[in-house]
Length: 260
Image (cartoon, rainbow, N blue to C red; front, side):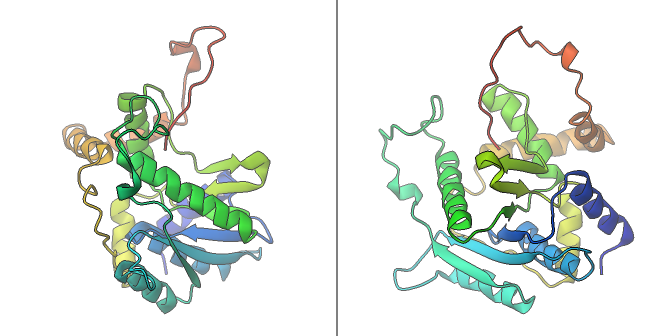
Protein backbone atom coordinates (compact mmCIF):
# COMPACT_ATOMS: atom_id res chain seq x y z
CA UNK A 1 0.00 0.00 0.00
CA UNK A 2 1.06 3.57 -0.65
CA UNK A 3 1.01 6.33 1.98
CA UNK A 4 -2.12 8.47 1.71
CA UNK A 5 -0.19 11.58 0.63
CA UNK A 6 1.62 9.76 -2.19
CA UNK A 7 -1.58 8.12 -3.37
CA UNK A 8 -3.36 11.48 -3.28
CA UNK A 9 -0.72 13.22 -5.40
CA UNK A 10 -0.70 10.44 -7.97
CA UNK A 11 -4.48 10.66 -8.12
CA UNK A 12 -4.34 14.44 -8.46
CA UNK A 13 -1.94 14.17 -11.40
CA UNK A 14 -4.10 11.55 -13.10
CA UNK A 15 -7.36 13.43 -12.61
CA UNK A 16 -6.06 16.93 -13.29
CA UNK A 17 -4.61 15.91 -16.64
CA UNK A 18 -7.12 13.21 -17.56
CA UNK A 19 -4.51 10.50 -17.93
CA UNK A 20 -6.69 7.37 -17.92
CA UNK A 21 -10.01 6.53 -19.54
CA UNK A 22 -12.17 3.44 -19.66
CA UNK A 23 -10.92 0.97 -22.26
CA UNK A 24 -7.41 2.43 -22.52
CA UNK A 25 -4.56 0.24 -23.70
CA UNK A 26 -1.55 1.53 -21.77
CA UNK A 27 2.00 0.70 -22.80
CA UNK A 28 4.50 1.31 -19.99
CA UNK A 29 7.97 2.20 -21.26
CA UNK A 30 10.32 0.38 -18.88
CA UNK A 31 13.97 1.34 -19.11
CA UNK A 32 15.19 -0.64 -16.12
CA UNK A 33 15.35 2.25 -13.69
CA UNK A 34 13.28 2.16 -10.51
CA UNK A 35 11.05 4.96 -11.80
CA UNK A 36 9.59 2.98 -14.69
CA UNK A 37 9.45 -0.26 -12.70
CA UNK A 38 7.56 1.52 -9.93
CA UNK A 39 5.24 3.10 -12.51
CA UNK A 40 4.38 -0.32 -13.93
CA UNK A 41 3.51 -1.55 -10.43
CA UNK A 42 1.54 1.62 -9.68
CA UNK A 43 -0.66 1.35 -12.78
CA UNK A 44 -1.44 -2.26 -11.92
CA UNK A 45 -2.19 -1.23 -8.31
CA UNK A 46 -4.61 1.44 -9.51
CA UNK A 47 -6.35 -1.09 -11.75
CA UNK A 48 -7.72 -2.81 -8.66
CA UNK A 49 -9.47 0.29 -7.33
CA UNK A 50 -10.15 2.46 -10.37
CA UNK A 51 -13.78 2.86 -11.47
CA UNK A 52 -12.63 2.25 -15.04
CA UNK A 53 -11.11 -0.71 -16.86
CA UNK A 54 -7.81 -0.42 -18.70
CA UNK A 55 -5.08 -2.76 -19.95
CA UNK A 56 -1.42 -2.47 -18.89
CA UNK A 57 1.53 -3.95 -20.76
CA UNK A 58 5.24 -3.16 -20.37
CA UNK A 59 7.77 -2.67 -23.15
CA UNK A 60 11.55 -2.68 -22.81
CA UNK A 61 13.83 -1.78 -25.70
CA UNK A 62 16.91 -3.94 -25.30
CA UNK A 63 20.06 -1.92 -25.95
CA UNK A 64 22.31 -4.96 -25.44
CA UNK A 65 20.87 -7.89 -27.42
CA UNK A 66 23.39 -10.71 -27.62
CA UNK A 67 22.44 -11.79 -31.13
CA UNK A 68 20.55 -14.92 -30.17
CA UNK A 69 18.14 -13.39 -27.68
CA UNK A 70 17.61 -10.74 -25.05
CA UNK A 71 20.56 -9.29 -23.15
CA UNK A 72 21.12 -9.85 -19.44
CA UNK A 73 19.70 -6.46 -18.44
CA UNK A 74 16.50 -7.05 -20.41
CA UNK A 75 16.07 -10.47 -18.85
CA UNK A 76 16.53 -8.97 -15.38
CA UNK A 77 13.82 -6.41 -16.10
CA UNK A 78 11.46 -9.07 -17.43
CA UNK A 79 12.01 -11.15 -14.30
CA UNK A 80 11.07 -8.27 -11.98
CA UNK A 81 7.96 -7.44 -14.01
CA UNK A 82 6.93 -11.07 -14.01
CA UNK A 83 7.27 -11.00 -10.22
CA UNK A 84 4.60 -8.29 -10.02
CA UNK A 85 2.41 -9.96 -12.66
CA UNK A 86 2.94 -7.45 -15.45
CA UNK A 87 3.31 -8.80 -19.00
CA UNK A 88 6.37 -7.50 -20.81
CA UNK A 89 7.58 -7.37 -24.39
CA UNK A 90 11.30 -7.06 -25.12
CA UNK A 91 12.34 -5.54 -28.44
CA UNK A 92 15.95 -5.43 -29.63
CA UNK A 93 16.97 -1.87 -30.45
CA UNK A 94 17.25 -0.98 -34.10
CA UNK A 95 19.84 1.72 -33.31
CA UNK A 96 22.95 1.84 -31.14
CA UNK A 97 25.55 4.57 -30.58
CA UNK A 98 27.97 2.64 -32.77
CA UNK A 99 25.61 3.27 -35.71
CA UNK A 100 26.31 7.01 -35.59
CA UNK A 101 28.87 8.22 -38.09
CA UNK A 102 30.82 11.45 -37.67
CA UNK A 103 29.08 13.03 -40.65
CA UNK A 104 25.56 11.99 -39.63
CA UNK A 105 23.29 14.52 -41.35
CA UNK A 106 20.22 13.75 -39.25
CA UNK A 107 21.49 15.51 -36.15
CA UNK A 108 19.87 18.89 -35.43
CA UNK A 109 22.11 21.96 -35.82
CA UNK A 110 24.43 22.41 -32.87
CA UNK A 111 23.91 18.84 -31.64
CA UNK A 112 26.38 16.98 -33.83
CA UNK A 113 28.00 15.31 -30.83
CA UNK A 114 24.88 14.73 -28.76
CA UNK A 115 24.70 10.97 -29.11
CA UNK A 116 22.29 10.74 -26.18
CA UNK A 117 19.74 12.85 -28.05
CA UNK A 118 19.93 10.64 -31.15
CA UNK A 119 19.71 7.47 -29.06
CA UNK A 120 16.65 8.73 -27.16
CA UNK A 121 14.99 9.90 -30.37
CA UNK A 122 15.40 6.51 -32.01
CA UNK A 123 14.18 4.61 -28.96
CA UNK A 124 11.14 6.86 -28.81
CA UNK A 125 10.38 6.29 -32.49
CA UNK A 126 10.59 2.54 -31.91
CA UNK A 127 8.27 2.91 -28.92
CA UNK A 128 5.74 4.87 -30.99
CA UNK A 129 5.83 2.32 -33.79
CA UNK A 130 5.20 -0.58 -31.41
CA UNK A 131 2.29 1.29 -29.80
CA UNK A 132 0.77 1.92 -33.23
CA UNK A 133 1.26 -1.65 -34.39
CA UNK A 134 -0.25 -3.16 -31.22
CA UNK A 135 -3.09 -0.59 -30.88
CA UNK A 136 -1.98 1.06 -27.63
CA UNK A 137 -3.48 4.52 -27.22
CA UNK A 138 -1.47 5.61 -24.15
CA UNK A 139 2.24 5.39 -23.39
CA UNK A 140 3.11 5.77 -19.70
CA UNK A 141 6.52 7.23 -18.87
CA UNK A 142 8.20 7.21 -15.47
CA UNK A 143 9.23 10.87 -15.37
CA UNK A 144 8.80 12.58 -12.01
CA UNK A 145 9.02 16.08 -10.54
CA UNK A 146 12.84 16.14 -10.59
CA UNK A 147 12.88 15.16 -14.28
CA UNK A 148 10.40 17.91 -15.15
CA UNK A 149 12.47 20.58 -13.39
CA UNK A 150 15.72 19.30 -14.91
CA UNK A 151 14.21 19.39 -18.40
CA UNK A 152 13.08 22.98 -17.81
CA UNK A 153 16.67 24.01 -17.05
CA UNK A 154 18.10 21.87 -19.86
CA UNK A 155 15.89 23.65 -22.38
CA UNK A 156 16.83 27.06 -21.00
CA UNK A 157 20.58 26.36 -20.93
CA UNK A 158 21.05 24.27 -24.06
CA UNK A 159 18.01 24.74 -26.33
CA UNK A 160 17.33 28.40 -25.60
CA UNK A 161 13.62 28.04 -24.87
CA UNK A 162 11.26 27.94 -21.90
CA UNK A 163 9.55 24.55 -21.89
CA UNK A 164 9.54 21.19 -20.15
CA UNK A 165 7.84 17.79 -20.07
CA UNK A 166 4.09 17.92 -19.55
CA UNK A 167 2.02 15.40 -17.55
CA UNK A 168 -0.06 14.56 -20.63
CA UNK A 169 0.92 15.16 -24.25
CA UNK A 170 -1.24 14.41 -27.28
CA UNK A 171 0.50 13.07 -30.39
CA UNK A 172 -0.49 12.14 -33.93
CA UNK A 173 -3.75 14.13 -33.93
CA UNK A 174 -4.83 12.57 -30.64
CA UNK A 175 -4.35 8.95 -31.67
CA UNK A 176 -1.66 8.53 -28.98
CA UNK A 177 -1.03 10.26 -25.66
CA UNK A 178 2.04 10.27 -23.44
CA UNK A 179 1.17 10.25 -19.75
CA UNK A 180 3.39 10.82 -16.71
CA UNK A 181 1.50 9.68 -13.58
CA UNK A 182 4.55 10.28 -11.34
CA UNK A 183 4.71 13.99 -12.23
CA UNK A 184 3.93 15.14 -8.68
CA UNK A 185 6.36 12.76 -6.92
CA UNK A 186 10.02 13.29 -6.08
CA UNK A 187 12.76 10.88 -7.06
CA UNK A 188 13.64 10.04 -3.45
CA UNK A 189 10.02 9.07 -2.72
CA UNK A 190 9.92 6.72 -5.69
CA UNK A 191 13.19 5.11 -4.68
CA UNK A 192 11.90 4.58 -1.14
CA UNK A 193 8.64 2.93 -2.18
CA UNK A 194 10.31 0.91 -4.93
CA UNK A 195 12.70 -0.42 -2.30
CA UNK A 196 9.79 -1.49 -0.12
CA UNK A 197 8.41 -3.38 -3.12
CA UNK A 198 11.82 -5.04 -3.67
CA UNK A 199 12.14 -3.41 -7.08
CA UNK A 200 15.76 -2.88 -8.06
CA UNK A 201 17.26 -0.84 -10.90
CA UNK A 202 18.80 -2.86 -13.70
CA UNK A 203 21.90 -1.12 -15.01
CA UNK A 204 22.85 -1.07 -18.67
CA UNK A 205 26.37 -0.65 -19.97
CA UNK A 206 25.95 2.76 -21.59
CA UNK A 207 29.38 4.47 -21.33
CA UNK A 208 27.74 7.92 -21.31
CA UNK A 209 25.19 7.31 -18.56
CA UNK A 210 27.04 9.48 -16.01
CA UNK A 211 28.35 12.09 -18.48
CA UNK A 212 25.19 13.64 -19.88
CA UNK A 213 24.05 17.24 -19.84
CA UNK A 214 21.17 16.13 -17.63
CA UNK A 215 23.64 14.94 -15.01
CA UNK A 216 25.40 18.31 -15.12
CA UNK A 217 22.10 20.13 -14.57
CA UNK A 218 21.15 17.68 -11.80
CA UNK A 219 24.33 18.49 -9.88
CA UNK A 220 23.72 22.23 -10.31
CA UNK A 221 20.18 21.88 -9.00
CA UNK A 222 21.31 19.79 -6.04
CA UNK A 223 23.62 22.64 -5.05
CA UNK A 224 20.81 25.16 -5.52
CA UNK A 225 18.41 23.17 -3.34
CA UNK A 226 21.01 23.02 -0.57
CA UNK A 227 21.56 26.77 -0.67
CA UNK A 228 17.89 27.78 -1.00
CA UNK A 229 15.50 25.64 1.08
CA UNK A 230 12.16 25.18 -0.64
CA UNK A 231 13.51 26.15 -4.07
CA UNK A 232 12.45 22.89 -5.71
CA UNK A 233 8.77 23.27 -4.86
CA UNK A 234 8.74 26.93 -5.84
CA UNK A 235 10.36 26.17 -9.19
CA UNK A 236 7.84 23.41 -9.84
CA UNK A 237 4.95 25.69 -8.88
CA UNK A 238 6.31 28.39 -11.20
CA UNK A 239 5.91 26.04 -14.17
CA UNK A 240 2.13 26.34 -13.81
CA UNK A 241 2.21 30.04 -12.91
CA UNK A 242 3.59 31.59 -16.09
CA UNK A 243 3.18 35.34 -16.55
CA UNK A 244 3.48 35.52 -20.32
CA UNK A 245 3.10 39.29 -20.41
CA UNK A 246 6.44 39.51 -18.64
CA UNK A 247 8.40 37.32 -21.07
CA UNK A 248 10.38 38.65 -24.03
CA UNK A 249 8.09 37.30 -26.74
CA UNK A 250 8.21 39.43 -29.92
CA UNK A 251 4.81 39.94 -31.61
CA UNK A 252 4.18 37.32 -34.28
CA UNK A 253 7.17 35.20 -33.30
CA UNK A 254 6.99 31.49 -34.08
CA UNK A 255 7.34 28.83 -31.41
CA UNK A 256 10.61 26.95 -31.76
CA UNK A 257 11.07 23.24 -31.22
CA UNK A 258 11.61 21.86 -27.73
CA UNK A 259 13.21 18.77 -26.31
CA UNK A 260 12.24 16.57 -23.41
